[in-house]
Image 1: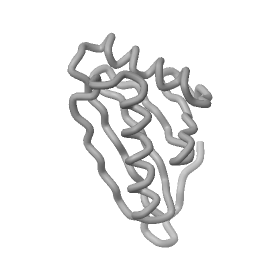
Image 2: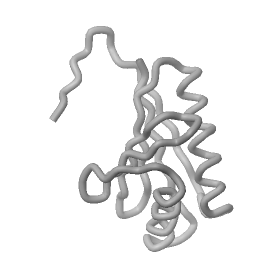
Image 3: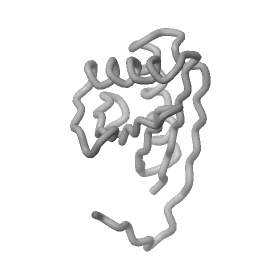
Length: 107
């Protein structure tokens, strides 16, 4: 299993992040988890956790393998581009393998 995190920045201020987040939530099935956190179902990538930060949007997902991580990244990039073309100024992508037998804490 692999954890993947995408951090998205816009060329705009916090209002630009807010509108990007709202468009994404409006165009995909989503459920609020907590203040500023949503589970968003992307058609080609499964479900990601969206966290609204003051200066960025963060997307977290757990996938089976590197191929699924790449598929998730492409789906997320396409979804963001469809929402507001040209709004994303930078996107960082990190993946990390979960250790075999690692315990996952569920709150």
